[in-house]
Image (cartoon, rainbow, N blue to C red; front, side):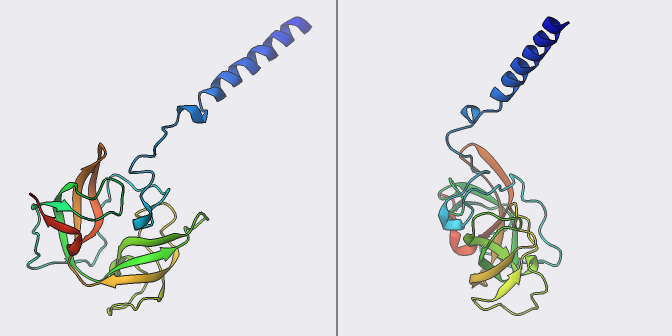
Length: 190
């Protein structure tokens, strides 16, 4: 009976070791994908960003005569995410609102995020109707990335340019309904 028990224990340890070896860091990619990490310019470093941005917040006002109407193919000049600058994109939404770059620490902890571009007025808790001043403390209701919804943030900068939702592909990853790109981060497709 002792030999049988020893054999069972040894088999269990061996099986567990093999299972754990399958989870080792050696199987992880050397470079994070666009959904895992973004460059420091947009404050997305090391954070998950879904491939589908989902619907825009309720109450958004569609732009009446945007420079780039829905369906227009454009070239992005923004660098919020790796591979974005120079990518071809299609406009899927154009809106008139105030758009903010924010600094915040993710809910649940993590490294502080600086100059995250962008959140819109409708993604802030009780912002009122007026443009918020730089330095204003706000609560974010957007969920673009893990730890953003409910985070306390500080307005780093803002713009009243038309803001767009785009579909684009970068580094082999297709992004749909990506929020947000402001007008000065877009140029006509060549």
